Length: 211
Image (cartoon, rainbow, N blue to C red; front, side, top):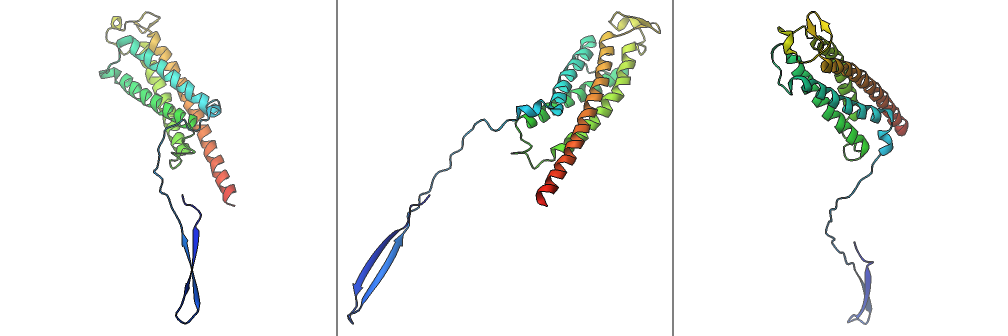
């Protein structure tokens, strides 16, 4: 910050009888200290109500329910032996839940357009959603197999009442978890589709802006 310059004029007489006029300008500058503050930035709540935002909310909720159903039979594990697939499903579902929540926060606070605009969010969303969709579709069959109880040496150890299947009882909790895995696969597939479409829309917008 600076003030307008001040001009001063001096006139002096020379020995030969002439006069010399001297003009000086003085500029005053002030150095301001930088002040940092915290405040609520721009939010985009309406974006969370678009299909991509609604899908994220559904994915987070259903992943929590699936984890709860799996752990309600034998606890949180870790599962060993033939049930090792349950441990893999719990880990991956937990990772998907956290990453989906991160995407939701990024979209809600519009971080992909402000502070974190350097990161390719649409491409990351596409790769993550496609991978999650494929994994959940595969785990649908694995979880469905576990729900039949036919893997157990002693069917009385399953700990859930239900229909008989090859001398074993159907584990209701894991059967619902298998259905949720299929539903999560569909939801993440839709998320991958919208991320793919958004990526092309963003590319067209940039091309139009630079032309």
